[in-house]
Length: 214
Image 1 (spheres, rainbow, N blue to C red):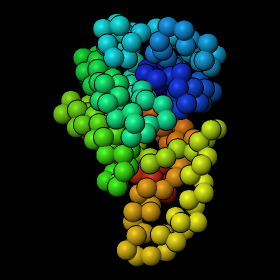
Image 2: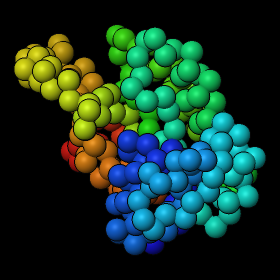
Image 3: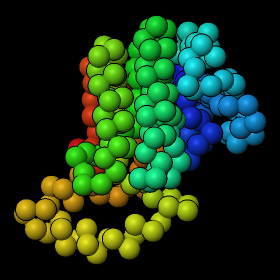
């Protein structure tokens, strides 16, 4: 069983992933800001720190095999563009540097499907984070969902008929698959597979792989 450090453990995916990893017997250390501890599932070891400042959690990293980075602006939209660099990208760079310094064997990162016609600033920040991971030399799993469905995140279901049509046309099939919707359960399952099956080098999972269709 792995010792897993999760940055963003109190978030939408982080809580669910932490719960699943603990259920499967892994040791989970959860990085959270002060005041968010009660949002964690039982069984987590809690580290209170700032994901934008690795010095606040660096000493807690030794002994972990895997670092999962899930920090990001909730409900991203074009209006939040400046935050994608100051929070999403900045925290990812801190995590990568800290994981490398601690000789973490495997880094797991949730990026975003690209290219895509909208949310350019969000995609650019996530791509820069991917570049930082590759430059670090860390063994890594990078997941690229487009939109994750879950409680309070169901409006894209109205687009399913359009996805069906685009998936039938040869000229748009690849884009419809790459930018398809995934559920939070599929994401947690894919993240769990990532933790339990570390790669050699950098592995990228697009939407079909996140859905379990290799």
